[in-house]
Length: 123
Image (cartoon, rainbow, N blue to C red; front, top):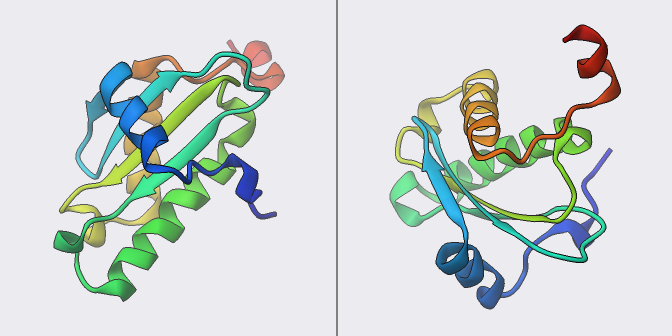
């Protein structure tokens, strides 16, 4: 199942607002920036992969991996957040599992994950 394009941050002003008003945490493979967005029924996300990561093939692969992590944890992300995920220079050597572990650690640290019914039962 694909992520709908309505969830994407598309304008430079949205990215700039997350940087100016939000908070961020850096991991081994990604940097996660978040900002609270009032009156939003769902979260919205943006991906950044700079040219230092490699050529277009490498950058697109990293974007696919980051989208897959967000898609897999879509139900756990609390509504009303804007997320900006930045690929770091070590990301091209990382596997999906490593990127996912790094992203989850940062998301928990920033407090954007909500407890799902299955997580409540397991806790």
